[in-house]
Each structure stands twice: as structure tokens, then as C-alpha cells.
Length: 258
Image (spheres, rainbow, N blue to C red):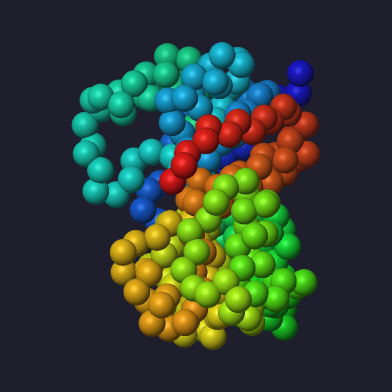
């Protein structure tokens, strides 16, 4: 079986995702060091106990996720669920790699890029070929939805492609113009999408205030699920790892209704 040194993999991931340039809510990169050689990786959205147990059961050497550990303002004590998760990783010599904002932002492998692919959205491009963006860290992508005429059409596409009923705020018959999107918990960037001229905004979660802002601005809002919108970047990244290093990479979807 082909294998890669754990540190070589970490360096490649850091470089590919340009991790050092992000000021994030958590550490990006190798969060837990395990065995030195990696031939089998389990990828998933979140480094939950359930995902770690699958990795152990399948004899994986590493776990690669979007949502890792050690978030800002968390209780830092190693007790309860944190102790359980850490014990699973350490007792089974698992490496844990996690990339949060770097995986959201990557122009090809990232969550926004991959959600656009899944939903058939067409990003608007700058002269240099990079996507047009707005919002915090330029995480909100701008574009349109070719072939779709209304907010209802877009909601139906989300339902069909993501396999879940989205929350929709707005008149289903209102016409689509510029569409903005940002995966995960980016409801707070709806105002940025409005300022950028979007007529519809797709993200994962919703807050009470989001509904009022959408209604008052007339911008259609689609809450498609935090987990559901962020399943695709880590899969694309895992495929890139498999192709680059010739190792086994499996995606495991531990469903989450949020």
C-alpha cells in the first residue's frame, strides 16, 4: 500500500489551502499527531465521535475534516465529550487534520466552489479569473443560476441536489438576478450579499434577525443546512489527496439535520 509521511501531507494541505493566511476561529492543519505514515484517510464534515469510531473500525491512519477541535471561547478542559474524542484519536494513533476557513475559500476545492458545482451555479469572475466575492474574508461568492428563473426554481434545485427541504424566505415567484452564496453558518453575511446587489442568498443556517432582513430588503433567502452545504469541499480535497499521493481516501457522511 502506498503511504505518505504525516508531516509531508500536512505541509501539502497547508500549502494547497494557503492556511497560514487565514485568521480563523480554530487552528488549521494537523490538530492531533498520530502515526508517522498514512495510507488510509477518512474524510467527513466534522470530527465527531461517530466519525472517529468509523475511522477506527476501518483501520484508517488519519481523519480529514472541515470542523475540527479547539474552537475559540470553548471550555479548554479535557473532560466529557472532548475527552472521549481525544482518547479515540490518541489511543488509536489517528492523525486529525482540520481546515475551516481555508476550505471554505479555496477557488476550486472549497465549499463555496463545490456547492456551486452541485447546484449548477455560475460564479461571476474577475479579469484574473478568480470568483467575485464579498463579505468577511471575501467568503461570499457572487454569480447566477443559469436556467433557473425564480426563487422557487432555485429552492427546488437545492431540495433536489442536497436531498433536504430548505428554509425559504421570500415569494417563490420572484425573479432571480444575481445570486450570492456562502456555505455553513453565514447568515450574518446576508447584509453583504444585499449590498452586493444579490436578489437571492444561499447559506446553511438562519437566525431570527435573518428573516426580517430578507423580508425588508426583498432578497430571497435559502437556508439549506450547515452540514448539507459543507459536505462537498472535504470530498474534493480528499480526492485531490488521493490523486496526489496515491493513498486510499473515503468520505463518510455522518448526517446532521442542522
